Image (cartoon, rainbow, N blue to C red):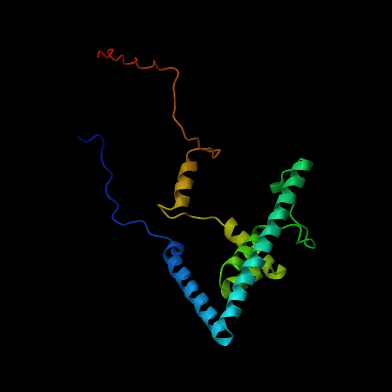
Length: 194
């Protein structure tokens, strides 16, 4: 029994994006590189030095994340006290880069410091160093603000399709109950006799 025509099968499966295709390979290569560098340092010095480097990275990363979190909390409470939206704050002035610019990059830098390894520590320090932090922030803004065409079957494509039908972008999940239709009669079960 067929209720509707089935669409013809797609002859080509949807193509995966490059990032999804090469991400596992990149992560594996990064892990091998980190382990190789740690063994080089251990061979040049000793195991205790490597252990102390890893512990120092975790402590420094935790401190950076804690400090950035406190600053984010202070910005939020100051914004709520003054009655302004903290997210809609004016852009920072060029000379005052420590106050403005957000806490995302310092938190990412702290997280990279906490990940065991030397390459991740260098990347974390680059996020925390102000000149390279500004370059990373500008590059990230360019990447995030460019127009994107989503691959079919990706999460971004599903999100775009969900918003496509509403001009205001609002999507409401739920069940529609109409008052103009009469409700179906309730089923009466016969009483149980026992």
